Image (cartoon, rainbow, N blue to C red; front, side, top):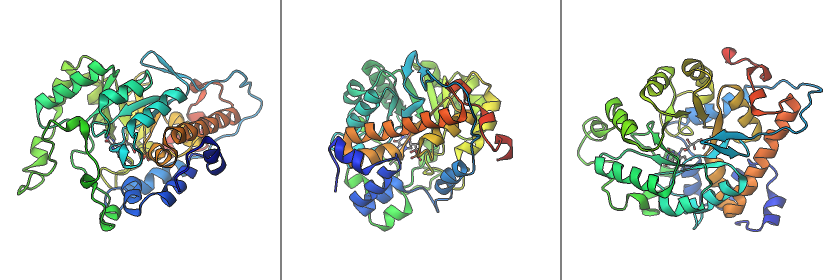
Length: 366
Ligand code: FNR
C-alpha cells in the first residue's frame, strides 16, 4: 500500500533505509528490480555497501559541539547538509509528479538537486520546483545540435551547472529486471529528448562499430567544457588519472561514482577510490561522491574519506515511490538527523572537522 500522509510516513519509516523495504512491498516486482538492481552479476552493487560497512568510527568524548552545523556552501548557496539528490531517470515510473516532486523535496529540505537528461518531466518544469542549488545532468547525444540545444535550455531555465555523466556510454538494464520481463521504454518517455533521435542501439552493428564509435572522447568533452556558459562537472570518475585530466581541462568538480553499481560491473566501490582521487586533485578541488549511501553515517564516512558532499540515488526514488514529495522530504529529515547524531558523537562541530582521523580504519588500510 502506498503511504501518503506525513503521519503514516512517520509511523512506518524510522530511518532512511526503511523506505527501501516499504518501496519493495509496494512496487511491482519488475519495476523494483529495475530500480534496485545493478549491472552484470551485481558485484559492484554489493561492494558499494560492503565498503561502507568496513569502516568504523572513533567515538570521542567531551568536545563542545553546541551550535554545531552541517551547512555547506556550494555555488554560493548555503545547503543545510552536504547532500544533493542524484540524477535518476524516469521518475514518473513511481510517482505522477516524478522529478518535480523530488525537486520540491530538495528545496524544502535545503539541499541541492540534479535533474537527469532522461527526466520524465521537462527540465524547465523541474527547474521551477527545484532549489537554488540545481544542476542539469547531460548525457551527450551523438548529435552536436541536440547537445547544444539541451545546454541552452538548461542555462535558460536557470541551472547553475551542467553535470556530464561519462560512465554509461553503454547502458544495461539489470538482469533481474529483464528476467522478470520489465521493459523500460514501454512505460516512460524521456521528454527532454522528444525532438531528437536518441536510439541507443543502432541495429546490425557491434558495440564498437555502433554506439562506441559515436561516443564522446577527450577532445569532444574539451569542446563542450570550453563552450558551456555555465560550469561543467563530470560524473562517473573512478580513476585518479582521469580526475587529474578533467581538472586540467577546466571542469569545476567531479562526481566519484560507479553509477550505483549500474555501469561497469566489478568496479570497486567509489568509497575505496575516493582517498586516492582526493590526493591526486588536491584539497581545494570539489569532489562529490555517490553509490551505496543509505544513511547519515555513510554521508559522514564519505566526507571523512575525502568528499565535499554526497549524492543520493536509490534512497530518493524509494522515498518518492512510497510517499511522493513528502516521503522524500521525510527521508531527508531522517538522514540529516543521523548525520548530526554521528557528528555529535564523533566530536565534529562542523563539516571541516570530519576528517580521516575520525575513522577507526584509516583510508590507506582499505
Ligand atoms: C540512476 N543514475 C543515473 N545517473 C545519471 O547520471 N543519469 C541518470 O539518468 C541516472 N538514472 C538512474 C536511474 C536509476 C533508477 C538509478 C538507481 C540510478 C545513477 C545515479 O545518479 C547515482 O549515481 C546512483 O544511483 C548512486 O547510487 P545509489 O545512491 O543509488 O546507491
